[in-house]
Image (cartoon, rainbow over all chains, first blue to last red; front, side):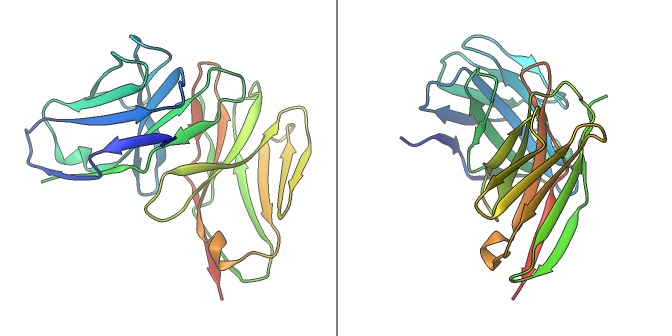
Length: 113
Length: 110
């Protein structure tokens, strides 16, 4: 049982390049989330999904797109990377019950130059 | 709007107690949470408290909830160097999301 995994772990992009971050979970969770973590700002929700085939905007969705074609995977895309997207990105998943404990992946450190 | 606030930094000596504070805004939250993030890792749920409770104790951890003041605290007894981490409080919003605080960096001095 691997839990939540993220690929890649590190990436450096040039401004304007595109990339996709992959999140996978093997816990059969309904809900999945993408956050970014920046110094002094805590975790900010980018997009989330409440089930296969669904996506919704979070607090800071601009510049990102997501897809949830399979229940176990949640992809985060950057179509045209900007230096402001330099951050650490975390994926999380949770059951749909009231407790909503979120299980986090190890993070992806992205630098946009 | 929804906003969860924490102080950014706390420094304690090994063996002392640590108290990390948090204020939240959504009085309808069913659960409130404390997450721990160790260096270079993702967040892990440390403990949680149901909104109809005032206190929850779990080994060295004590969570206190003051619903009137919307104040949540985490006390770590006999703090160890392994407790050095960033601690996040979080509340559950009505829309299936968790709202996280900014995190408190706990530094434990030997």
